[in-house]
Image 1 (cartoon, one colour):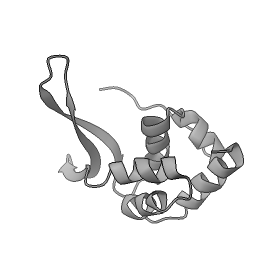
Image 2 (spheres, rainbow, N blue to C red):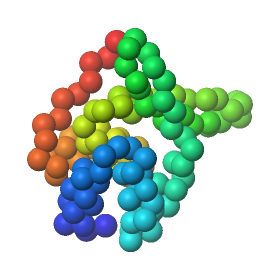
Image 3 (tube, one colour):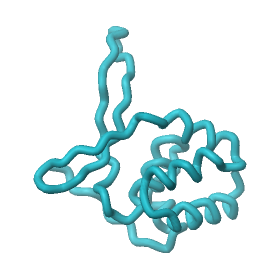
Amino acid sequence: MQHNEFVALVKRLLEEQNLPSALAVLKNSEDTEVASAAHSLTGQFSLAEIEGERRIYHISIEKDDQGVEQEYVEHVMNEGDDLIRFVAWFFDSQFDIKRKETYQVAGKTYRQEKRS
């Protein structure tokens, strides 16, 4: 994907209202790698209410070093957060594009999350 195509796609995704609609746009991308990555994530998100927040998690099953399947849960964003959080997570997790770079393309300031 050319840089200008990446910029256009990020800006297009930020026009969406929520994660499911942004994921649908990614699935229909003309870029086959982006579409394939988005399709591979289908059914891997879960919503949980924790401490009064509605959090969206990505859940995946991977084999550990001993070949045993392990469930991995990663907090992606909260419901109602700016969609840039999902977009940056998607490109980071699927294409190793740094979150900061995606934020810059979107004209937004990236603030790294504090670890708890």
